[in-house]
Length: 212
Image (cartoon, rainbow, N blue to C red):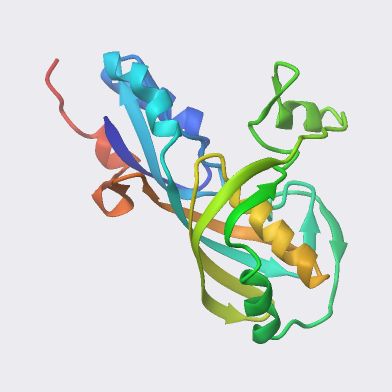
């Protein structure tokens, strides 16, 4: 098992491919991180890949930076801008809305996500211009804290259940505020009992000399 601190700009699949090639092993990750995101990516190798489903069910923790007043089709800054809103939001308004996101909630994954729809990943359909109606799913928020606010940017930390989309969380926060919001940075800090502080950078891992 490798605990990888995924760099920004790489897909999770590409990280796995590089580890496979370097160590000549079967490998797979246990939960996708978007190319935009950094942080903890758990990669299993060899016979241990059979345990992937166990890791998928683990709770996660994230630090998320988002910008108010912008909506995109991907719910993050790499997508196409759909709407802009210049109305200012006070810290008190944001804190009030954040209190609504606690416990079990219904959440709709982004159209541009790895969610499987009709045998294809949703983002593959969305890129073809095919309308994707993903049904909402019940997920859980165990903690949600506002760390920084400097309008129009805000940073939150959250501990959530498996299957949770932080891009959808930011989008829904913006919707309740009436101005829209989109993610600009995501960092996964924990997967179950594993913390990003225990992880190594991808290049450091690829430099390891592991005996067969």
